Length: 181
Image 1 (cartoon, rainbow, N blue to C red):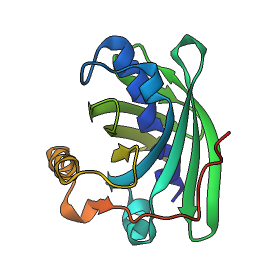
Image 2: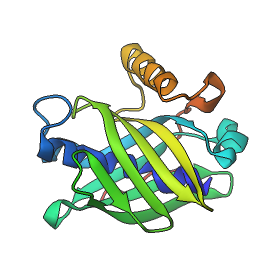
Image 3: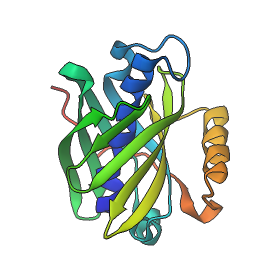
Image 4: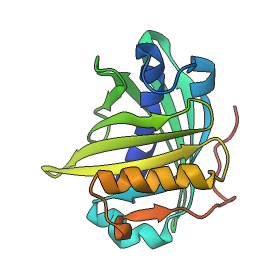
């Protein structure tokens, strides 16, 4: 669960860098990247994810743009033990569309596809116990993504070598939310 939780928000971080470097869809801007996102689908090769994926529910993330292109990401992740909330600071790597955080492990993430307004698909890697784990995530401004976006996520997951068993569309939840401050 920690692997899923710690890497969920990293994906959003790539969106701001994509805007700054002109990657992704045209028209991205910081006002569209900042704010609340729902994490509505995952694909991962992490053993802990695969063991617990049927227990997972939709998580939330809020992005705040900081100076020098850095981001603060706040998470609300439902777990069987209750709602886990955390924050992390992510720094751009200098590579277009990529961010890095060394908090609780070495994590990188890169935007795979986004329209900058309604969805983002992010590919993340994390080194844990000497092993590199991979995760693809679908972020949405709403609790639902269109059938076209869900199909795109599944297609990109297969292209990244995730099997059908590694892909999970997360059910909605109300009990674990970020406070809007």
